[in-house]
Image (cartoon, rainbow, N blue to C red; front, side, top):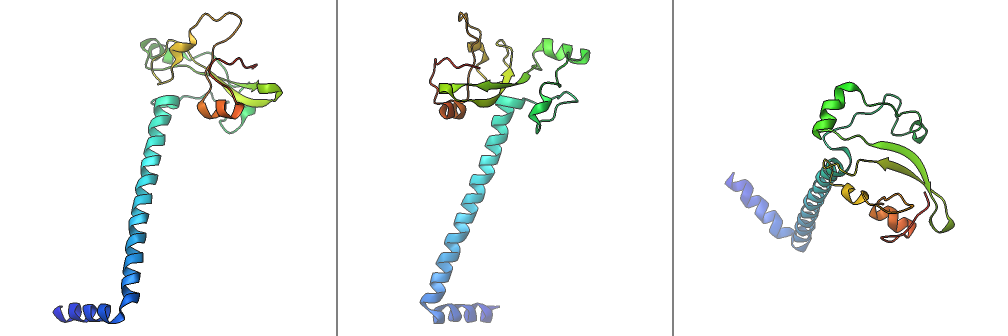
Length: 162
C-alpha cells in the first residue's frame, strides 16, 4: 500500500503542470456540479411549497369531466359540490374555486386567460382574497399575477375589460 502511494505521488510530480491543471479543472467542475445540483433541488422544493401555499393547498378534487390540459373542458366541468364535502367547506378545511375561460382586452389587444373565482373570506391559501371584498361601483375587483400584469402592461388600480 505504501509503495502504491509513493508511485502515485511520483507520477503526479513527474507529469508536472499538466497534472495540476487537470486536478484544478476537475475540482472546479465538481464544485460547480454540486452547487448547481443544490440550486436545482432548492428550486424544486420552493416551487412545490409555493404551489401548495398559493394554488392547491393540501390537494385537489376535480370534476370528472375536467381535463387540465384541455381548456375547452372548463365550460362542461361545473357542478354542485357533493354533500360529503359540505363539512370540510364549513370548517374552512376546503375551499371551492370556480375556473372559467376568459379574455382580457388590454390596450385594444386580445389575450386568453383563465378566471379563478374564490371566496374573499377564505384563509386557506396565501392569496390576499380579502382585498377582493370591496364596494367598487360598476366593477368586479380582481387581482392579476405579477407576470401577467407585466405582460399586459397593467399597473395597480388599472381597469381592464374582461
